[in-house]
Length: 109
Image (cartoon, rainbow, N blue to C red; front, side, top):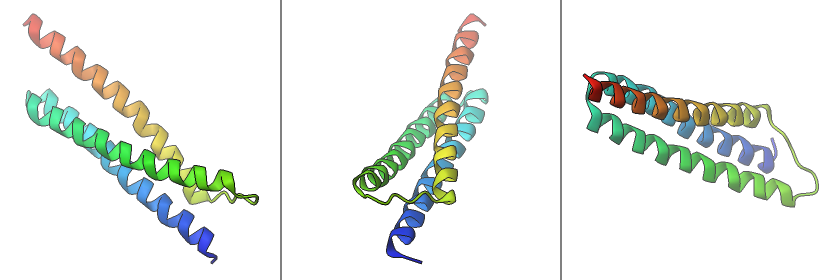
């Protein structure tokens, strides 16, 4: 395998690790939110956002590097990483919105 492909795989695994962490933290954070552990949930959301930002930086670096090359290479693993990256973006939005809804409902009681 060429150095280029190895680098793409390495960065793809880094993206997958960070977005996997972010997704888990959002989901577990929401579970804590429903248990009324608000501070813990918010801390988990913060950690999830930080993992997402790290994944974004890895992804951006790879895309910028690929855009400068004349012979770009698309790896299935990278496509999977990008798919997971997108799903975390959606999950984070919906979990944050659901958390706000729970907060409003709690205030009504």
